[in-house]
Image 1 (cartoon, rainbow, N blue to C red):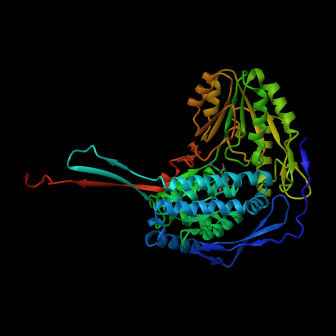
Image 2: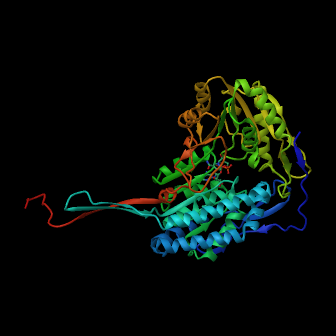
Length: 502
Ligand code: NAD
């Protein structure tokens, strides 16, 4: 049984009312309607956002288009943009507690974790600021005496940025500072469940000196606001993070006007464990990988592929440690696993557990919802005897549910790891260098961790193979994703005529 931390009622907490940011002004939605956010850990309304419409999205796109075509932002020096991004980073750091609190109450994630994400986000803004000064093209001085070739990198234009609810501030920070560093202008749509911290970011960016129209933030549902942001002819690129299903739709929508798309989608990430591994370190990483952010994490290590010889012992050790994980009030500093995003999502998670049992899996731990008086919570759950063809082994559960599979040979482990549609990340645990490198090279995933799990750095690119996405975020090329190249082919001296050779 998990350790539970009873949620305390949010007393004297007034719901916060937000407007949207369009062309430098805080405005109400065209519909006049708003969306209420009920805190998943406390069952009270904590935020009200404007219910944006297609008309609002169009106004924001027009503002971004104007700011790009006629405004100062794309024409500033890299150093000027860099300084504004650095100022934004300082202001984010100064308001980190407020931002973390909003993310914790709106998403249900533990406050300690939300604060950690804010620290990571500040580092990303600083890293993007550094890249703003280093963006450059290429020159070719090797084309003969009569030719000089220069390849320019230009901002791609207006970028639609669409983000999910599971890491509200961190994910917008993986996109927006890089788009801004390149000189793009943007329309941002946060998830309709967790828009608060992105709207506060709008205040921060105005204070930092980002001109009107460069960052517009429109709140609302995906079909009402997100869809027009993916089809509008004045948008040049769509950067989307979310589910694979909506990612597919986004790509199809963007194809109508052949926009560039960058997609960060779902995952079903394996951790492959060999008997010679540091099992104590792995057991801790397995628990962290499964329950971090209540498993509502694209990178969750939700599939353990254990060598048959150690599977029973290791599963028992993971179950023992899982019992000590503290589940409950997102605002309690000791909480490690917070609330589930919505009651509907909790039902979906429970459905996967029931489906796995029907298909023959066993429950080594948990398996049920936790009634803590307020909010909605799920007990850390371990499913044993999972077979590679079961839904729970192939599909994203997006909850604190761990599936345990077994293997005999390295080839079999690689086959099981690769036998799904996703390819976001993977882990391998062994003290043998050859084993780690073999798995690292043959597992089809955008990141492979060796003897660790879910570490990251602003310098390291992140993204998926196959149906986990297209393109990479972070890393030194991240800013280039928001650019076009232009070739300047220059002639020097007398040109050889086509019609009448001189
Ligand atoms: P989602 O796909 O339901 O929503 C993501 C965003 O898309 C939201 O802002 C939503 O309003 C918007 N949207 C919905 N319908 C739309 C439409 N028709 N057109 C345009 N936009 C639309 O995803 P979610 O439930 O918010 O987030 C969970 C998913 O995100 C999981 O699948 C998770 O794996 C994925 N994710 C991936 C990464 C990554 O980096 N690979 C990171 C975090 C989350």
